[in-house]
Length: 265
Ligand code: IPD
Image 1 (cartoon, protein in one colour):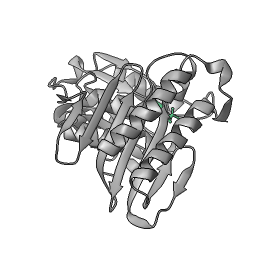
Image 2 (cartoon, helix red, strand yellow):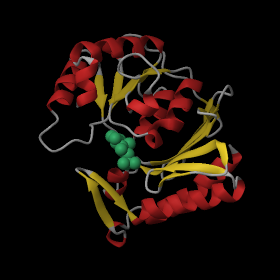
Image 3 (cartoon, helix red, strand yellow):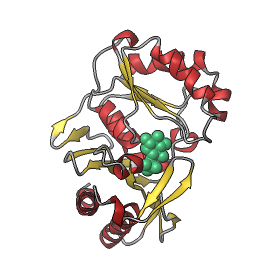
């Protein structure tokens, strides 16, 4: 964790410097509504350099560079250098660096750092979750009508959000409110901190969620894919909350969109 925090702090300084300097960041489009900038790439290079220096043998799975094998096949870093790129490019301070450490296929440590709000979320497997030294616990609200639920709008072609919008309407009819903050790593960390009572999104990548999933679980949260299983890192589906909210939200999502249809959206 010390290595991960030091790397996140260093990359966080480069992101904080670039925040608000969009005209100087070469921005390109990876897909509909999906952007990458020089800030993402610079932060990723900083993270790779720092983590490789500290643990030379480990492999990487990074949003921009992809998978890089290391001689140590049992460890790999899963990294999103800038989760919430669109927010970042619009001057919205809701974005984060996400670093997870995978050992023998298990996520054993995670760090999510928002350098503008100066909020550092972290967890080690079995050691609890923290934000800036404060222990995190998921919210205690247990009924959907009282719950504030986070979500993300999947990246699909423009005009192809029909299934998602039907699901959203079904959720909105049963909960206190819905928010789309724009950074999945923070959505999970905020659920761990009890800010959101629950969160769901589909179409995510392992680097968006690997650290956040551990932080959420270490804060007492529950998380499954859309069929109630554990495939979040491969399916990209996340349904999260405390035990009661997670169970009710999953049932509601399954009623609104049968899992096979949700996977196709
Ligand atoms: C994105 C954010 C967003 C989520 C997308 C992600 P990026 O990550 O987490 O909230 O809706 O699915 O890809 O591209 O900004 O790193």
